[in-house]
Length: 79
Image 1 (tube, rainbow, N blue to C red):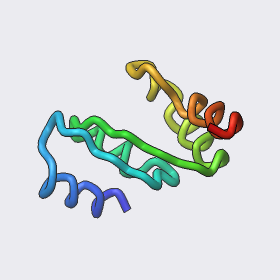
Image 2 (cartoon, rainbow, N blue to C red; image 1 turned 120 degrees about the vertical axis):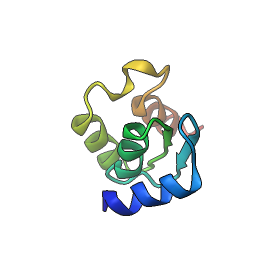
Image 3 (cartoon, rainbow, N blue to C red; image 1 turned 90 degrees about the vertical axis):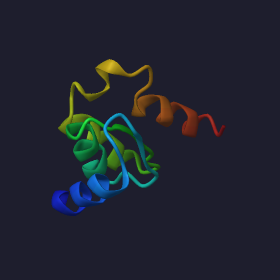
């Protein structure tokens, strides 16, 4: 529910703040945070969810140094 995330971010963060979502799931918190000028950091251990976030937001990572693919590589290397 994007409206719930929007309310929480409105009350507990400011524009430009970093928002950590340790269980990104479908990426709702990250998507809403970015639309509200926050900097989202999303973590997702489930490869299927991480790939779904990539597909739903194809240009999302163009401004960032790393993508979810880096996380997959790290996990597969047992680091």
